[in-house]
Image 1: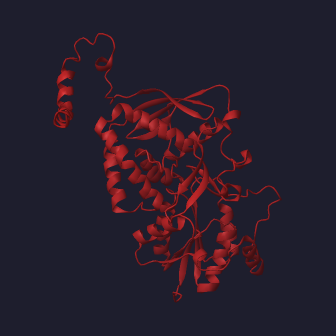
Image 2: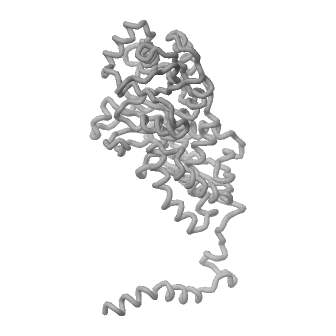
Image 3: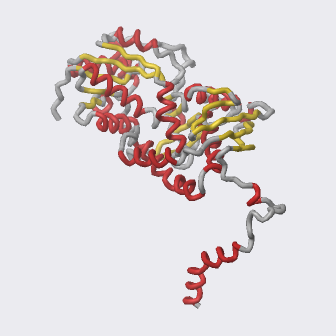
Amino acid sequence: MSKPTIRKAVLAYSGGLDTSIILKWLQDRYQCEVVTFTADLGQGEEVEEARVKAIACHASAVYIEDLREEFVRDFVFPMFRANAIYEGEYLLGTSIARPLIAKRMIEIANAEGADAVSHGATGKGNDQVRFELAFYALKPNVTVIAPWREWNLNSRQSMLEFAAKHSIPVERKREGSKSPYSMDANLLHISYEGYDLEDPWVEPSESMWRWSVSPEKAPDRAEYLELTYQGGDIRAINGEPMTPAAVLAELNRIGGRHGIGRIDIVENRFVGMKSRGCYETPGGTIMLKAHRAIESITLDREAAHLKDELMPRYAKLIYNGYWFSPDREMLQCAIDASQAAVNGEVRLKLYKGNVEVVGRRSDDSLFDERLCTFEDDAGAYDQQDAGGFIKLNALRLRMLATRNS
């Protein structure tokens, strides 16, 4: 396949070894200008360092933006309204970040007059798919450059040699200070892959985890937490109003000290292989438990059941990279419509890795104590009505039994 002519490309840039090499590689291979974009999604790193590195590598323009509020408000919160979880365990922390990064890259490409976008995702993973589906959904004719599918730098040593040859600054950390794992972090989670995790029988080292203490070392006293919901989103913690990003950051802090949100899973990647990964999602784990609790008293039964039926499809769309697809947007409209009455408070008990719901209340509650009490209900419910209800629902079963007897 012939190499396209590129004048200017926008690169998703972290400032690390891989993307610094990609910056130089793009300049050499395509003889083009490279604009770098670094998103602050709450990964906990000093993103301004990327500016210095990008300028040193002769980027033609450098964009560094704080997207934490937009990330939680417009991506994380809508996803949690759906109670989305992939394959029963994964809270989609990496998956939900990619569409926002891709969206902003396309906006920058349009503003800069760039004709290409580029990313550092490998040819084995899901992220290449997530980035590129979003790129094409937002700019159908854009040229996408995926260096890992083109170059022959297939080892860390070959990349270091490339960096040395081209005088690319490489941060040399002292021995033992750098994690051996491939990690991705944002306000929702941190993930770990590679190294000894490639053997699914090997237990992760306690030193791997960054955001949480082990449940065994968590406090011996439980902590109670009260979350206030409006329209399906958390608006306050313990009565204190907070922005979406502040909510998630605080729940991460509280959950992490109680050992909440660790998982070790083998998941089915969209590209076909199975992959083992470990994740810390303390705030998200609390949010999922609490949201289901407030829905339990505010959602109609059939609406709640329909949401549960739609959720796996919704989660799969996000995992596979279809955030900007019409089917995801259609499902989102239905999900959001269900949240109008999802208002109230949930009280939680956090203890050694566990999140327990111990209270829920709402002015929009459908829970009626008079109907379900074991005491005298003062005529609120006529138990004799149940006989006809049961007979009507048993009619088809009785007809089948009669025929088959």
